[in-house]
Image 1: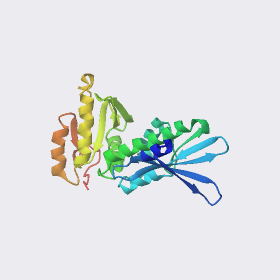
Image 2: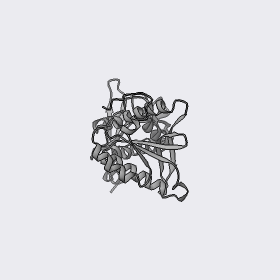
Image 3: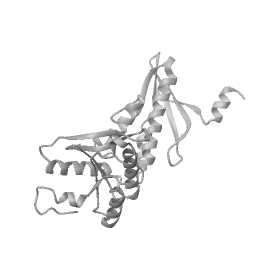
Length: 254
């Protein structure tokens, strides 16, 4: 068996796709998959005589949209942009992941691009099924927190390292308290419990002030049940109770 046959047996394959101008784009099929079994591919094209550009043609973000995960504002997509940047690649305004590298460092460019896509695919698998409006919910809660605490600074995307060694990101830091926002969907709250258990597993972090705000408007009973579980690790505030703290009379709960 030749080297190329061995590589192909691993699931790697390359198809040349000539465009209308006669340029060739190489489509590299990999053995890696999204959570639903769809394959992950990377594209490569020459840039001038000495550079290669690896890119995903926007397929990663497109796959997330098909899973029901949407980013309604530029700020909402920052977690994805952060994942891409940490892998060493770039995310364009239209949602394309890419990396440009000298031809003699092609392996490095391929690795960084693939790493970014796989990390996003992992993020997608953890978040699919959670309300597609979760990022909108976070923005909504931010607005309420600013109304309640108009003179206090809100910091975003605060990290704590858990006992697993993994970084865990919280939505806000306000007045020394970490705050996360979740829907009442069991998958959303399960992911939150996993995060909190990871954080509390570090002895020095057992007493760090953490609050979780749960949206209880759609299913109050389920939200209350999930709150009991989360309350083992953090303070819990139902969103409807947050409304009562607003400096506006006669709040209408939708």
